[in-house]
Image 1 (tube, rainbow over the protein chains, first blue to last red):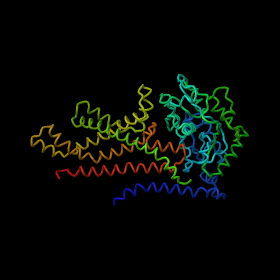
Image 2 (cartoon, each protein chain N blue to C red):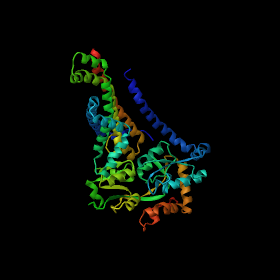
Image 3 (cartoon, one colour):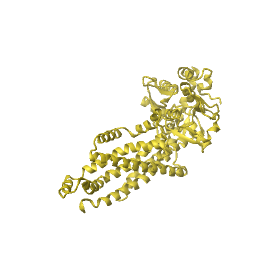
Length: 290
Length: 221
């Protein structure tokens, strides 16, 4: 009698453990069974819908326009993928993700593909499979104009805002574990916290900072980079080589028609200073040159 | 992906701290909510002019707005009106705002549940209103409120996970942090679930035991 409530509460936990186990046995089986009927692309075609995880609060990459539509540099690439895979750019279902939920959404099969400005890092490569890159990025920090902070090391005894699970979060946590970080789930929450003065700086992908600083005067971006410049790439679930290869072929094809440059002109160019070269932001055709 | 138990163990010191924060936020919020509720319930029972309407309005407002929205309002919106409090303070303020309202209702219901015959009997043997309150109403109302009161304590403690949204380093914040840094989704959710069981289950059992002990004296046994 007494153990009954214990057993009830432990059941979901056990289920969780079992799920984790299931995943293990399924994963290697998928690429092995590459025969057409059970292939991943066939699954998408049978469903007649590509499910893509995108950002909804990170202009110009993924955001919501005045009419409530999901748009942006990344989001529109997703539409194009749907058009080329299923023949209609509307055969795509967008799922809103946050930086920290991108990989869990892939791991739990909630989405086919993540197109949410995800920087390629060694740790993430362990968890998911990246396709060839579509953007390049570096992490920088933004501070108020009046702040005494001039260089990165001045932040050692300050509070730095980051968005959970971003490259900035990971780099700061691992490189400077003793620095004080204030972490929020959403980019917009972090920016609100910066505007409210809850931290001395906000570390984030520099394109987002440049774009925000252009619209919100009174802030400056520190020139120093946090870590190296890195590629940003779409990602698929670990082991899904079929979809990864399809995306790579697709990116190469889109490179020939300079598709990314078109999206850059449409969304990104106006957000950045006039002397920014498109090649310093986008990676056309998936060809990374470090 | 295998279940990385070594990784789970390596996170335990951080989770130990996080449990401390959860219990701290929970304990403070329960205490302040109870204070607010005692004050409010007294106003309601005594029908203090004007004030009791104010209390009614507060209870409705607090119970009909989601905690997360109250939290975001205090943390992100109030600074533009010049009121800036820390994440921890925002957590206590909003949990008290919500918890106070729920506990007010619990105490009020407890007072109303005291049988009218008890009041009439009290009056018939010549007790004054003050004596009636002290010796007849409050002891019984307290006992009658206990089950709902304790259930709300556990509820409030569980609600503390919401405050992870304003960067209070409690158990959910710590879990999400590790998932974001190392992508050990299953492991960290398992640790979180286990911690919740370890925190909430003994508390529930303890409160149920207390409830049984305290209610033993009910109705003249």
